[in-house]
Amino acid sequence: MVARSNILHLDVLGSSIIVLNSLKAAEDLLEGRSELYSSRPPLRFLNEMMNLHWLLVVYPYGHKWRLAQKIFNRGVRPSAAQGFRPVQRNAVLNYLRRIRKDRQPEDVMSELRHSIGSTILSIAYGIKIKPSNDPLIALSEASNISINSGAMLPISTLMDIIPSLKYIPGWIPGITFKSKAAKWRALSDDMFEIPYAAGKRAMQDGTATPSFISAALEEDMDLTGLTPDARETIVKMMAATMYSGGVDATLATQGTFLLKVLTHPDIQRKAHIELDSVLERKRLPTFEDQASLPYITAIMREVQRMVPPAPLAFPHFIETDDIYEGYRIPAKSTVIMNTWAMLHDANTYPDPFRFNPDRFMKDGELNPEVLNPEHIIFGLGRRICPGRHISLSTQFMTIAATLSMYEIKVPIGKDGKEVKVTEAYQPGLVLLPESFSCQFVPRFEGAEDLLDMPI
Image 1 (cartoon, rainbow, N blue to C red):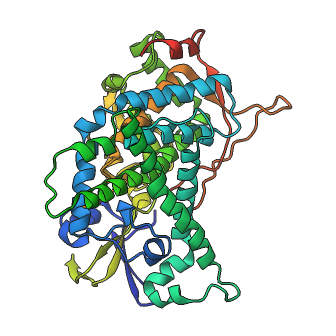
Image 2: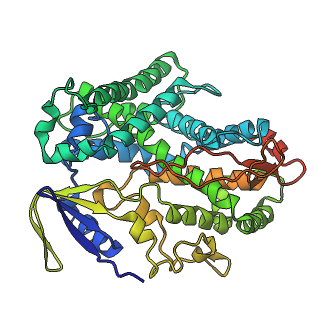
Image 3: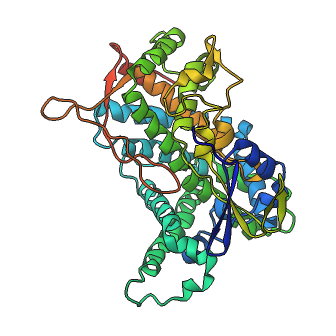
């Protein structure tokens, strides 16, 4: 076994980068000293070139961020998140109804994106979307692709080190980042404005369902110093962040779930036995069933651990010098939490590259002594993802409902033979599986009829 340092320091062209490889180091700094480690690096390409001023995750720490976070937390806190459960369950059922029409979709990731996108659109803006080919879901996908692409460009890192690079004329041969930034900036502006405008129209004409923006605009909250227009701008920012940030992370986990169970029929069988013991093949699961379905939760946790949506958490930033365990952390350092290393630490998770939900089980129940990946994948400290409760409940319902109805198998080609499914992922901040197909086989007679039962 190769020893790994808990904390690494890298010097990149004079820019200091700190990599936190252990959970202890991350907790000590990002939680224990959160007043120092809660900001973000300049991210000039994303903020200035792509105009991602509305994306809370890239926002620097300060008064405006705290106001935005206050609104966000009030809108998606656990008690508020429970009010969105009917929307989440309906979206999952609609996803399964589309699967019922095509049990071997050519691109199951597209089906999942539609389901998750419709969930978050409804929660954020209170609007309904088309059964297929909805332009707002297409906009979200294009916008998220642009964010991932922009963050991965070498110029994105270089511009933080050499800010004057943004003044390079775009007409110079080989300089393509400016034209890309202009295209992505337009998507960013649309992502900020168009869904919100649709939500406001729905509120005005009485067709909106209860949503984050309706609650945030109507709730009496002490936001000293904010004009009504400034408050509305922050609400618009939070809704766009919820939609843009929530789709891909949840989509990544659901895609990985399907890829993993495809090659682990034994794990599916264990899940089917547990589901049948609770549901008796007479109904689909509810959120209240989660306490009685520990193995389903264990599968969800193992998916999160095995392929975390963001293997390197979004970077933090420290403005001043700090000392940790005798080591100096220079001011203006970018601090990166190595989520992948923490979730593949053999001391915490023996045989870490084996997909094994049973690692989270003991005597038929969830083992509280095994570290829950949820503690890591959503970040630490003041920058922890506020929408994690909605994401987790969506993940549970999708996994439980899918396995209660179907056995997931490799697809069958036109020649009648099994098609090899490759576990491949797109490069980016979020590990999204490449497009793939799989087969959904009803587990028992009448399984798909459960979709037509009253909720």
